[in-house]
Every structure is written in C-alpha cells, then in structure tokens.
Image 1 (cartoon, rainbow, N blue to C red):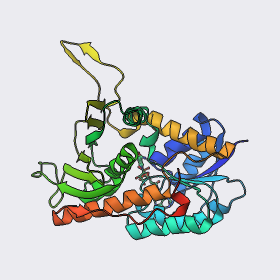
Image 2 (spheres, rainbow, N blue to C red):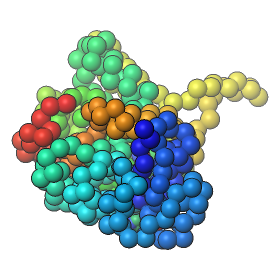
Image 3 (cartoon, helix red, strand yellow):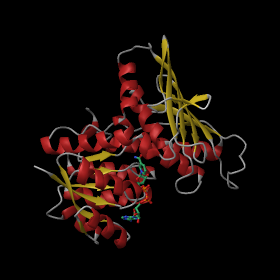
Image 4 (tube, rainbow, N blue to C red):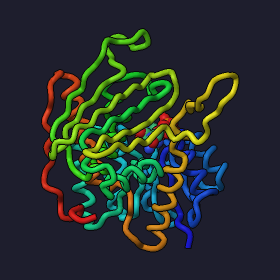
Length: 337
Ligand SMILES: NC(=O)c1ccc[n+]([C@@H]2O[C@H](COP(=O)([O-])OP(=O)(O)OC[C@H]3O[C@@H](n4cnc5c(N)ncnc54)[C@H](O)[C@@H]3O)[C@@H](O)[C@H]2O)c1
C-alpha cells in the first residue's frame, strides 16, 4: 500500500519534501499540491505527476489523499491545522506549530477533541544521525550527568530578512525543541543577550543573539544564534557532562588538505547539512502510517512547548530580563511516549 500525500506550500522545503516523497521515499506518492500561488502549485504538481488543488479545505477531504504535509509559512500553520484536523487524516506540519501561544494551544485542543494523535511536527533534528548519537551518549550516561549544553546555529543569510523576533520563533525554535528532547526535561527560565550590532545588522534589530536557558533540574543551555553570519550554515552542539564531554560537530564528512592548509567546506544552506534528517523523518512518517505504528517525531504538545519557549524568549529579548517558563500539566493524550 502506498500512502497518498497532499503537499501544502510549494516553496523551498515543500518542493524538496514533495520530490522526496514522490521519488525517494519508499511507500509514498504525492497526489495533490496546493499553494497560495496557483502557478507554483501547478509547476510542482506537473513535475511529480500530481494534481493541483486550489481550495485549501478540499485538500484535507480529497478521496485521493491519505495524509497531508504542510510546508506553508510559519504564520499560517495554526489556521491550516485547525481547518484540517477535523478531517482526521495524519498531518506532518513544518515547524513551528504556531507563532503565538494561544494558536498553539488551539491546535493542541483541536487534536484532543479529535481524540487521537495525528499530528507530527517537522523538528527533523530528532532524526539527524548526529543528534541521535548525542542522545544515545546522554541516555547511556557516557559523560556522566549533563551540566552545560553549548549550541551554535548560524545561517549564511537571514532567510526572510533579519527580524530578531523571527530569529527566535523560526530559527532558535529548533534548539528549544532539541534541547528538551536531548535532556528529557522542560526549561525553567530564559535570558536573551545581545552584543553590539555588527555593520550588517539593520537599525533596530539584533544579530547574533546569545540565548541562555536553565532547565528545571538546573542544566544550563546556551545558543549562539546568528541569522546573518555570512560564513556559511553551521549547527553544532557540545555537551559538558560531570565526567566527560560529547561534541556533535558540523556534519562535515571530508577534511581536505591542499595548498598548504587543512579544513572542511561549510555549506551555504541548511538543506545539505540536514538532508539525511529530512529523508529519515519522511521515511519514518510514511512507515508509521503504512504499518499503523506510533509516530516517532515531535508531537503537537512538543510543538506547543516550543512555542511557549519562543514566546518567553521574545519577552526576555524585549525586556532584557530573565523570564520564567512554565507549562501546564501535560494533557492525557500526550502523557505517554
Ligand atoms: N525543518 C526545517 O529545517 C525547515 C527548513 C526550512 C523551512 N522550514 C519551514 O517550512 C515552512 C516553509 O518554508 P520555505 O523555506 O519553504 O518557505 P518558502 O517561502 O520558500 O515557501 C512557502 C510557500 O508557501 C506558499 N504560501 C504562502 N502562503 C500560503 C498559504 N496561506 N497557503 C498555502 N501556501 C502558501 C508560498 O507561495 C510559497 O510557495 C516554514 O514554516 C519554515 O519555517 C523548516
């Protein structure tokens, strides 16, 4: 049985996911493409032998659609999920779940009303071989108790123009999620520090940021987030433990020695660094749907938690203070697994 997927949003990542589902992933086809811009939807649909659907509501109820992948812009994820969830079909939605806490909670409540978990979020780092190995290190206790987590997250250029608050909700949200997952606990507080602006930072914005979180048990986690870093795309994570250190480097496979120097290439874009994570995420999603096994990625509650942290991050940035982070009790639907 092949899972017939509809893709919403035919931009950079939606197109990459669609082509992967149509050609690379085993057990899936793409039957429907929808985009706000019909020409974009049409071009992608033609490329992968799918059909274009112009009315968003029809995507979720179409007879030839078993599951939906949402890759539209951040600001519309929640409204599209609220429209689509009642149809009851599995949805893989790109991160973030929502851009406001209220919208994220509304999506969680809609899934609770449905009575079963159908939503997975595109926090693909949970499928990245580097992060998976780092998680194994921590779970096995190979470096003792984790005490400090150092993260670097740099983009060559800010993907949607440089807006500091969007750096937190769109970019650092990856670290908010992966930190919870790696440490298996929630954050208690957040601080956002800003150095003097560099020459490329627009008036009124800040870049890079230094985000400092403290978890409930007292682990410190810091993130250098640099949206307009120029030097290339880089993500690293280093954990200092009570009896050792685990370092997840930049994912480079080759060290080249030539012309009297030694080094690695730095990719310009994120796709190469996380290509395997995107592939494994999609294959895992399709496998779970085909074999009716639990979804392994981040769920709606994880998305809600990350959105709460983003919201507190914005508050910490605006006020220059340390802001407490509290989450309500985990609803029963998400209490296990
Ligand atoms: N997981 C990751 O690492 C990762 C990487 C890149 C992007 N993303 C996320 O994926 C989403 C898309 O990012 P992108 O880089 O592909 O953006 P993009 O701008 O390249 O593409 C967005 C597409 O959505 C379409 N669109 C706009 N409004 C729409 C609407 N209301 N309904 C349907 N389509 C609409 C646009 O026409 C465009 O084709 C964002 O939420 C982004 O945060 C995640």
